[in-house]
Image (cartoon, rainbow, N blue to C red; front, top):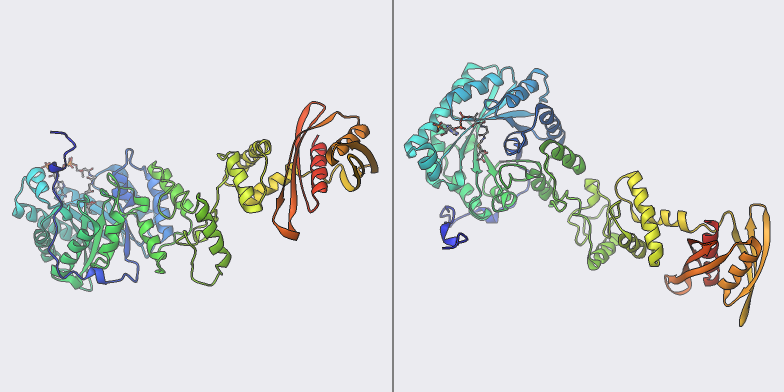
Length: 547
Ligand SMILES: CC(=O)SCCNC(=O)CCNC(=O)[C@H](O)C(C)(C)COP(=O)(O)OP(=O)(O)OC[C@H]1O[C@@H](n2cnc3c(N)ncnc32)[C@H](O)[C@@H]1OP(=O)(O)O
Ligand SMILES: CC(C)C(=O)C(=O)O
């Protein structure tokens, strides 16, 4: 039998919920966000964060507006313990922020956890034990009663620790780990045992957190499981119902979203979805999803580049360029029809009207992003991108040799400036380097006799006054080259020349590009003029001035 055989697997548990209500409900406000970046995110790293990195990430989480932050598993490791002590001793926890710590339902670990929390104003003590059949049978070697007893004893030790330190305002949290793989009624039974110990009230609620420790079904099944729990558990008014989803099937965000109409008040997750295996629910995506529906996300995500920078630095993990809302590429359109639609919509979008732009679910400017529906040109871009931008934005179709020269200059400038160059900047580079038809020499006027053999008289402004140049040849350019050669004594020949119209009708202009050889050296020049001949002569002059 092949190893790739679907018959080895079974579907995750489902609840029978024929009267489910969640599909008919609409979410109208943000849930309580609880960041677990410094715990679940941290425990999933090849190299866990050091205290300095944890401080950086903590500062970011506070700046973004998280009010509940799981800061670690202080009984597990020295850095986690020290970080909690630093927060407390250095008074780094703002008045409106509550820290949360995780601990297994083990007496010694719970004792150590409370030691780590001495002196804290307010904290959430989060205790958990796993409840699924595989964990009961194969990890804990306990039956249902045995695993329920672990939870009950854990709850008692947590309650005792709080009684011993009445100076702190404690909130208790319990997670039946692997909830989604647990028989739904049994999970409720375990949670009831915990609630019996804690005796929460509406004034002093506790948190029950339902984890999809491993995502084993689709988000609608998770929503059913949450609604089932929310409607069957006792003392619902004394519980803040929390969810903690993982992304094994790629549905962590969707599962958390559907859990909200199903009854969840609170969502645990991480910035950008870091966490065990495929990660946790990405809180940034969840919050931006709400924002894009016109709901206040209650987080300030307006500087995503800072979020990405800090997370990347602290976790060592890259962010995918197509990561929802914040990826480098998510506000760029490569395909012509998208670019066209975006350009047309943006032209009609007024600042005060509801956002209504095809292909752009929000205004990229809200996240500090530039609108770049075309190609983004940076130091990594080649001549194709540069040419595309000039063509799309300004109707300038550069010949290949000029594309090559310009791309090198654009690349050098973007390396110096760092980052991206927009269309206007690229045009400015083009004009600065190739449209050099004003100094030291400029064309003040010309007279052309076209009698089979062209004769030109060109009036040129030079640093030391005006000059009248005379020349002849086949065509205006040849005549001008002849005039210049006679006057300057240089050996000039035209290697290539191209021109095209910009725009249509009476407003059309002519763009001319010329490549000449002066005393053996190839030089390019360009010009734009309403008159085609003037454009070509000025392009020549641009090249000659660049020598
Ligand atoms: C799904 C989640 O993300 S849960 C969070 C998981 N996070 C972490 O584990 C990170 C931090 N943990 C650690 O560093 C370590 O587990 C420590 C330091 C806390 C404990 O280490 P150790 O004492 O060596 O225990 P270890 O974790 O290897 O063994 C687990 C033991 O605790 C038991 N146990 C595991 N989880 C729990 C729990 N939640 N409640 C009670 N007992 C538990 C296991 O059954 C096992 O018991 P056994 O020794 O009788 O077989
Ligand atoms: C401890 C719990 C909440 C957890 O991290 C999980 O189950 O994934």
